[in-house]
Image (cartoon, rainbow, N blue to C red; front, side, top):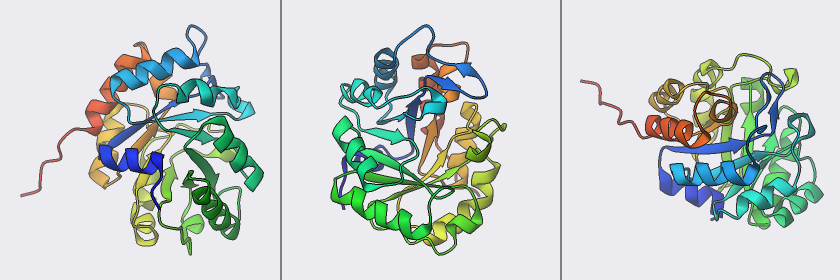
Length: 236
């Protein structure tokens, strides 16, 4: 099934999903000197095809942030603990184009049911896994996006991140899902995106690293997008 978020990501090829979160449990406040709307515009100018926003309380987020970001015209992913059809309806009504479904929190049957509900609402299901057990037997509907989370949400993502979880789970993820596969969170520098691309991921969700470095969100997003667009040389 065709949905706005999925289609935009697929058209972009190897693509950055640029995320906004007001704060990080590991880093602290991230928007102290700017605003959601301003950062969303910077991401758009940098060339990000899709945006993401963390509306969860532990990141200081809220639903109103979605409409601020959607004014860019870019599709927006809502990241939160979405566990019911009502949460999906709230997500759609707030202006988002995609909704996070977290396998660490939900039973597989509930993930599949909610993914189907999301598609019926023209929302892209963005299904996140963090272990081989969560991938085992996972059968997502066409039009869903599968993401491997490189961080541990059980520790409120205060771990160091990196690409190793994505590397370890990539083959298993490809074996259960032939749609878009995303390396999500824990990508700290543009080189991490290059590594994820070599592994075979279709896209890369980056948040804290875009907002916590010495450069503007625009400049940092440009560097990550350049990494995503780096040509992979064929092996001889």
